Length: 322
Image 1: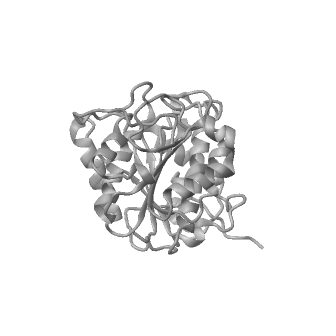
Image 2: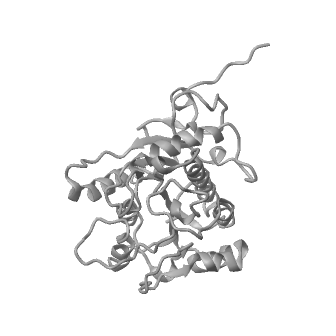
Image 3: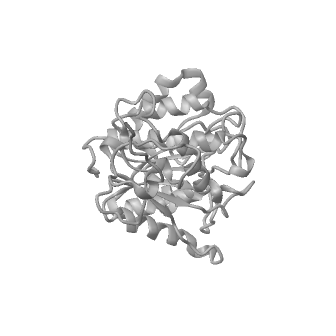
């Protein structure tokens, strides 16, 4: 008895729900083999790529991150992720919307183009899981979420860097965007938490910091408990810079810093935060030109799946509660 073969699910799948298997080494690439479409009807989450990296201060290349994360995700797309109580794709209708378009030749207009692209999607209902791109993209993405839901929001920020360096002139820089977000009232530093930091910035702007030494000393469970206490039931925008992970786990990034979190720590901290009120999420700074064996892109893809699991586990089920 033969069984029907499944192939190119990014285009051919009928339902937006469920996990289906196909050869991991072939076929059309989308994030986790989700349907590749601009049609938002019935979608709970849209995966959006933002291939922007001209705000980097060290090695460029994160513009190729969305493609690399999608490709790496194919190896995981054939079954429910290990240890999850449920398959997020059984609860959430997830599509891959493709990439945000912007005119790189007119750089001052790019932030607004990203914001408008994101807002046009979320205003129609779906939440966003965004694949970067460098970390500056979080600023226009947060703007889009505050525009829809109101603000300020809390941020749950995983990173080697604070990204709160002061600038008064609107610099497009992946180290300044949370300075702007705090000063403009988009985020509330008092209910936000930055995890994994290991570069110096004396002005925290009031953000709560659980730096990498703190995480290593106190452990995963204490980090989860402290982060959960700080964000409470506030609406949370979750942003994960892949350089939060130590370069031994994520070499493919523009500004690596030794002494970071392990992949296990990053994944387990996210897993332990089930029930927080996530409204939007991104994974950024994957630069595949510096990767080794795709381990950085693979880590990012798995972290992105943990974000979907968090979103599916938040209060209120599929409907956003903000």
